[in-house]
Amino acid sequence: MTISYKTGPSWFPVLLSVALGLLVAGAQANAHVKMNKTIPADGASVAPGLAEISFAFTDAIRIMLVKVTQQESKVTVPPASKLPRTFVTEAKIAFEPLTPGTYAVMWTGVGRDGHVMKGAFSFSVIAPKASLPDKDVH
Amino acid sequence: MFTEITIETAVSRALVYAGTIAAAGACLFATTFPKAARSMAAVLRWQILIGALLIFCVEPIRLVLFQLAISGGDAELAFGPDMRWMAFQMPNGQAAVTRVAGVLLIAAFGLRVPLLGLLGCGLAIGSYALEGHTAATAQSGWASMTLLVHLAVAHWWLGALWPLSACLRALSTDDAATTIERFGQLAAVFVPFLLMAGGILFAMLVSWRLQLSDAYQILVAIKVLVVAGLLALAAVNKFVLTPRLRTDTPRGANSLRRSIALEVGLAFFVLVVTGAITSTSPGGGH
Image 1: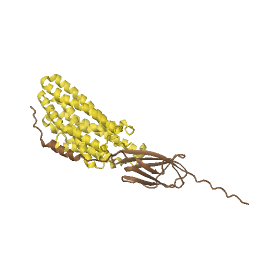
Image 2: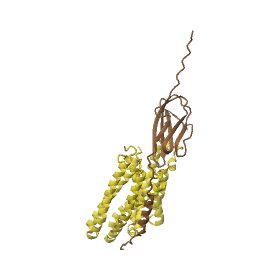
Image 3: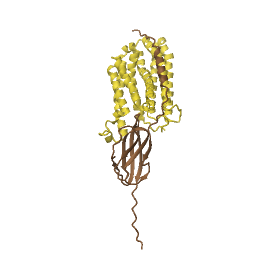
Image 4: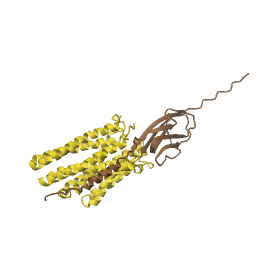
């Protein structure tokens, strides 16, 4: 067998060139999603009765996990609301009112590009100050 | 600076790239060089088998790692009823399923029914556009098409390396030289498109801002350097070693085989760097 090849079609590279020329369009930078802000913020102290944690991200993310653990008892507090089932830039997750203590929040999510993001922060729920007994005034 | 990259992510991605390059590359070689492929069916079948095995072994591991990552490392949660199928709702899970389907098509029909084989190649190569940075850019349609041009040529080029080396044994000297010369002619046309598409993609992803202190851009610079080495080797093959095949056959064939083996090694290094690049945020994101 003797192999020989015809010269390839000359239009093909031209077609590719045209297609590539069309492709030169500026897309925006695409850094991985990061957390912008949380309420409560990392390290914040809040009053008892907090029943919601808010997240804001730099871009849309599908939140996969929000795990809140009370540090003193090591008990995980289950969310009272379901996590959003779509890609969101903001989310509010409800909990039963939190009792005084320090809470660690760990979250994971997936960006539209499929990258897994994760983060953690903590805050404290401060016990109300005991009210002083009234002094008798004579 | 390189905090987002883990060795297992970069290597597992490189193995997936190697898998589709092996499987789709063999199929594309058979389509481009049908006469040579008839005498090399066994080599091409082996290459497809190795590619398919890589995909079938590595993709499930990547999905398990993904499940563990989204559940914060808690295996019970990762495979519990709430999260068990989460990977398949995400871009990377869907890309993996598409890739597996494509490689299955190639394995079943790649060398027997060219159209189905090419459809398999399209699925395997196109799967990469469903995930990653290009899928999330503001103009993901354009970025994905650029990526497809880049990947299609990369699969055709790198996937042909082993068959080209094998054709030195499987074909007569004349036929092997003719096939390798023809490959060199086509590569001279196609590879510039790979480079252009890669450059355009890079520019799109970093918003046309060069910043070599950024981890993403450093990795791209490393990739460019290694690809430059790969191109230099390819040029030696085309202009020095391939002509020597016809004049000094045994030594020419040995030199060419060694050079192609070195090209395969460099190509795998490029794939590992690419795996690291795809794990890193472009645009100074961290």
